[in-house]
Length: 174
Image 1: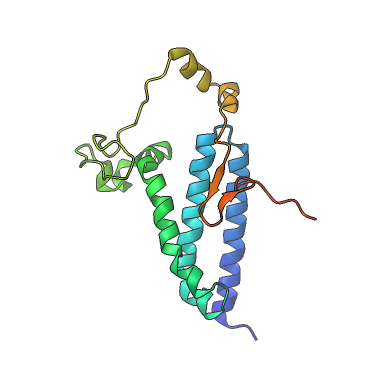
Image 2: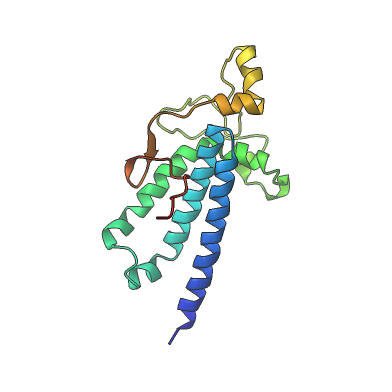
């Protein structure tokens, strides 16, 4: 006999699986490798926060071991640390109205928080522009130019270390 909570969990799990499949399809369509990594990280943040929100249920049904549940927060922290410098740019790209933006997106932004390996002179919300030659910059704005950009040879997966294939590649059915 099903309990109400189990039925709700099944419905949520189905919709989350559908949402993540759509996200992975969009990731595969993206020609820009840096864009793919950002979309992938957004998917990871969504998936991990949903697991954290339902951790009591997941542990009670023994869907996840306690040892793996303990490291969920550290994985989420790692991904958020990587994604943090892009957040204001993502909000701009999503065209979120100013009324709904957090105070960090205000005109008088506080200094950028320090993340190891980042430039501490950047203000929160500033777009980081690296000095590039104009020919390369012009090529990167075309679709063909973006398709020429290559990712690093090694794709790092936060859960399993170095992965054989990027996490957005669909597994083939046997």
